[in-house]
Image (cartoon, rainbow, N blue to C red; front, side, top):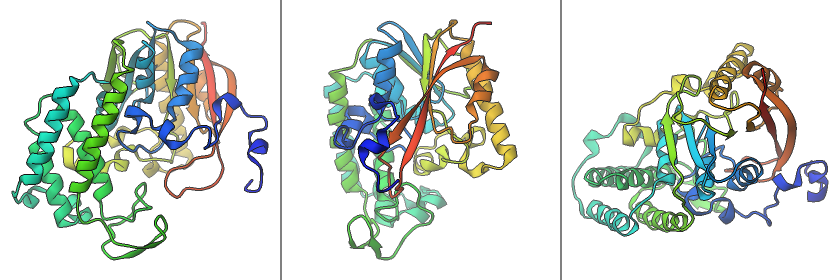
Length: 377
């Protein structure tokens, strides 16, 4: 497909759901709090906007059983729609909460800047408290700076503390001993100079973290202020739980979600640095479709069973004919069985072209949007 024009690629696709880079540049895809922290596998907020506008209105409640980085909840709140999300990953829940929290902006900014300055001035030697994984993946100076920042933010009140933890995680992601072009899937620490595909020159592994902490503090304050101008009073609830058994606090009018797919991403391992630094509860054993489990027939069968349970559990909190929008790369055609088992009726299968990939993953990519409704029984 490499030689085909953009027009040819979009032939037969839902054009309202497919955007070119010129139409939807990165700065727009990562507007305000959507860019607070890199997250592999999230869907663009503009896609969520389309389906919120099609199927939901102010005062409704939308549910996302695989909330990820919180895209559905952020866009719902901006429209006055209540949002409830669930995720097995503690880091995902932290990120979604941070994005949707209402802040006292002046005191928040002061708290974050004081914490950063306190960390900068510290000369405490904290390397002894670092885990073996941290000592392996960070240069001593970088790790020392991350640990000093972690110590400095302990005294912050909620919700500033949670936001500071996201800043720490984002800085930790950038400060690892890895190649600049390989932040998504680094396999081992890099300690020697290397030929950098991103910068087209020889680069050295990162040796410090302080510059990232400063940069991301400024960026975070700016993004939170931008979303504050759009944020409504609509309530948001984020549940650290298993979508197969979670009990929702409210009845929902429908679902918009992008679930994991078998054998693609390990969502806990993706943010290992956050779990190591923040001491988050690790529930990777309950991930559905984790890459580590592979795609053998038995694992795919388990995936279908787990997804059926998750959507069946969600259906219990939805009215008849409620819309359920699922964005997924269903290349194995697993979802007809999942939807049937969960009591959902597939009305339309839309195809959208994704012409942007993170990292160095090139090539054409398509995903489906399954527009379903709760079946009447």
